[in-house]
Length: 324
Image 1: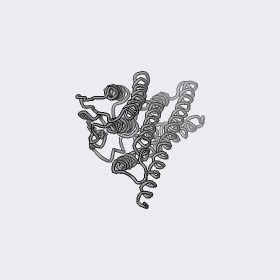
Image 2: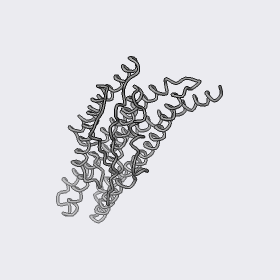
Image 3: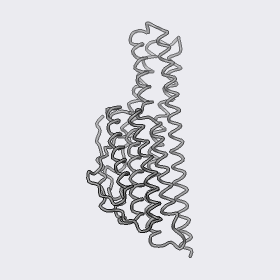
Image 4: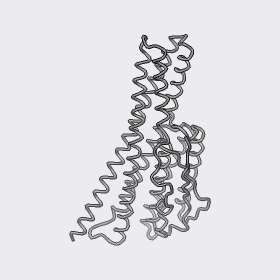
């Protein structure tokens, strides 16, 4: 299966800060500080552990938090009648909402396929436990699992091969605290979403621009943390996989267990006790995958619900504005 990587370059923005008030400065610094902490936690987790549904769930929680902050910071300041700036930020939010809903639908599709695979593993376990099952039947079950595993990754690609840098970074908002926060939140959401997409759907290569211009100290730390996270993810992604299959720890554990059972079958199941232990291990790892999928699905659904709620709020404000 050939893989074509989409190269997405996040180039730096020249002087996107230049805050207009002390209050906005403090708020922007606080939001940046919070994002920096989140990025550092995700990076630390990557250096210490393989990529898993646990990590994807943590990243999805940061995406959810970013969406909430975007809605509160920008749209939350708008009142009816809506000012020109308010209209601008609402347009920004609606674009982000569409992006996040599409993203959640992609992830739900991946969840559905992985859940189906996990059910197939459970079914195979019951078959393998059956003492009357013949070698040919056992071999068929293993082959079916291996074929299904190969279908889990690399099928669904991002709908756009290239993504506009301006859409990602929000560079058109320069020399304002709002521009700084917009840049940080949207870049965080986009990069984390592409990480998760790469893990469970299709590989996407991400690279950051080398030059960084900044006036706010927090932005320098944010960009540094972001660059470190991108580097750690790329290293971990290449270490854990070969770009042709799921790099998720849960999936790889099942694959190894299936291969162990296959080896027993090819040897004629000379040691029945060891064969049953291998099946026990496969069953436990299948439940571990199920728990990971459910954990990730839960937060994906939360993000989707939050976005729908936020979108309805904005639409309500627009409707009220037109009624004035």
